[in-house]
Figure 1: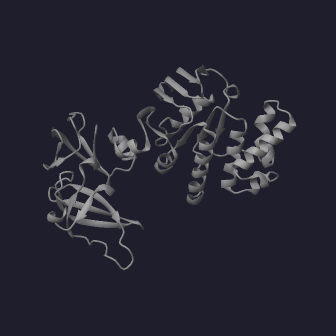
Figure 2 (figure 1 turned 90 degrees about the vertical axis):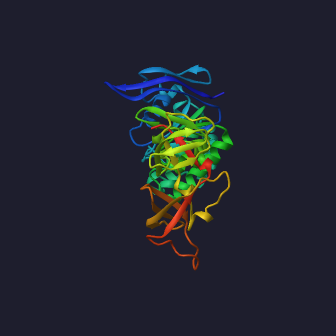
Figure 3 (figure 1 turned 60 degrees about the horizontal axis):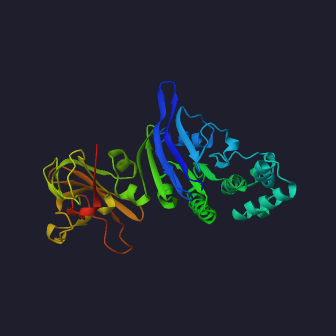
Length: 359
């Protein structure tokens, strides 16, 4: 079993805690994304797991074996660097073979394993090329093959897609997930891109200033953020202050009472987080819906609209002075037009669309 257990790991640089008291268990075969802004500690945590950064305090174990103070080459981990770190004077096959040669394998075994690794990333025909003769996506595949060829217990990937264009990022993240699934290898993936984390991971770890803000499935982190930071980082643009008033209701600071799907009120959760794509827009209150699972509508006017191709973001000012963003599908060609500035609308949302978070 190659489960990874972090027990209160901390990394200090002088008086600064780059990573502070992080604990979690990553199960065998999981793909876990460390997600957060630059400087949040995600890469430092990854490098402590890989042995490239010393742990100030705490313990790291893999499969029950304490590896806290082992050097990188004794941890049996594959590492994919952000800048690929390929040897420019070596061809593809030699780059992939390097780790095996350091382990003293025979030439026939190296040849077999290198070919298998290149087959996995669909690059066997490029074995004799130099890195400079390959595209960024192909170089990333070489780096992935080199990390996998040693048959590691754990695969560590540090922002592996950040240097690729949008199309290549989409292609490579699917490739990484497919390979990870086929091998069943425990994988930790560092990224600052929410879409990457949500689309390929089993679990997302959101970090801020060296601490873990939330750990959960992509659905849990996206739909049920536990703090204002997580909500904002996951793209929630409507954060409305107020307080829980009674079971299932939240009183906004602006005065409105809106239903929320909460069994018991928590006085510490004073922000209603509402994703813009979960807000319905209608022309009048009577068409907003009256079912018990839909909130009473707020009335307002459209201040402006931003066309985003498939979607349109409407900024709406309510009668009580709230400013909200509602994101709706763009009209089809020849269909209804974009709602104009000044248009009066009513806003509503399902009770389960709004999450209560702490400030």
